[in-house]
Image (tube, rainbow, N blue to C red; front, side):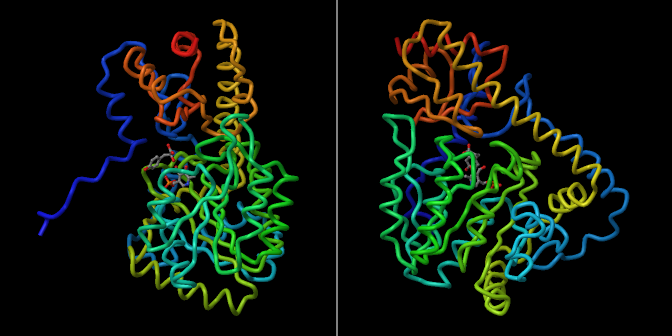
Length: 397
Ligand code: PLP
Ligand code: TYF
């Protein structure tokens, strides 16, 4: 049965982590996988999460099946977090949400749902996009194509080309947009650019699928949802895939949400029944523990304030790292302009160096990043930034 199989390549991002762990170098630097790390290089459990977990442990009375939608409270609080509690789509009862196993689960549910809406739909993703997007949607039998996005030469957006490409996409297709903290480029749309993309989406009639894996990591919880909120107010149909992995630090609990918005309440109900059918066919029901933590936090004003403070601390550390790396590179005599790193948002930026230079950094200096030269900014700290900047300077100068 298994004899005809040929080996698949390992996940290039997660594979780096294994290599890094096995490297004995005392000054090794991990800029690979996108997880938040503190100054000590540790990914801590948020204090608000610990408190919520203790509360659940003390009060939980059953582990009975939760049903395919997951927790109704979690779903409601997550859609309010994404859209704001008084959003017109919520008030018009057009929003339907299911809890999912992480943002990845939300994307896979969305993929199978799209396949049922239109088996011939093409999904358009930014060039570049998160490495898993393509595989996830192709696994559901969806054709994936790209629209221009990041300008590697000028470290900016190919905004005019992006608009031209989106202006030729029709109502049968789906366009995937990153809500904020674009993975892998760190290059986000400004609010004014979002306004233009939203106008094109409404005009063309395609369905926007917004992937929000980093709400609160860019500018702030509300600011990062600008595109999500204004898109949802302007189009008839939309899909939102959210993740609680980064902003609640719940990576291994696997919790996220898939939200659909239909043209009116009746059509949203029909679409929701299909969404639930899709869920039943994949994993039946989502895990409950992560959702219980998030709903406890978002449902308590005190814990929510604590969460917002911890999220702000994570965001500010990352932004501080961006500025620190740029300053250190200058200090080490690097002539090349890296100012763009300080201006980009979220966990990632491309250094913009060649694959050979990436390999040299890994082999000679034990500095780990994805082949594309994407760096995970959270891996930088006061303790390693000198060594990191010196290593980069030696490789590129
Ligand atoms: N979407 C993007 C853009 C991501 O970077 C990630 C990775 O963290 C995900 C989705 C999936 O997140 P999760 O770990 O919740 O499955
Ligand atoms: O891009 C990243 O690094 C994060 C984490 O299969 C991640 O999104 C990477 C690979 C993967 C799942 C999550």
